[in-house]
Length: 244
Image (cartoon, rainbow, N blue to C red; front, side, top):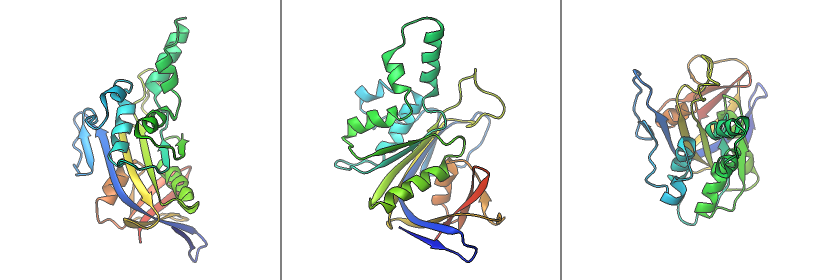
């Protein structure tokens, strides 16, 4: 884990990613290139989630837990960075609907509507006691996740499990500009030096030779390819993830 400064005085953060995977819901009438590390299906694979935990989770929770458990082994106990634009918006809407209808609020909906609740439930199931950072970064969460995980590595940790997930907004909130256009979850392990060596840098000018993309699932495609770099938009700026 290191930082370097180029001739334009831009800071580049170096790190590595050792494991990655993702799930994306099927989009009707749209063909998506398949990758071994990115599963395209109607629902996420829940076979790794214990039945008692599975019953408490809906689509977002199952997608998040499924992806995280692919990278957790017995005895693992390292930090987690979780990012979602709206969190479990379905449960939040149910809580609001119950309040409007003057009905008792479901304790399960209320507790699992908390932004970091899914990771909290999973940490109890997996016996994780390391810190969990929960981020709500709008529609462009990849750069904030990488920066948060990089900061954790700089504090001395060997690796960090990162997960980014979101589902379609409920119809009452949805319009043509709403993102994401389909439900998804990705996860990856960032390390000091084990895996694919990468760097993250904020650009002054855009280099057109890189693929411009802001979808978290595109990180999975990038890691699984030989592409030299990936452009990611965040907060009005362009960032470049490149192979070292």
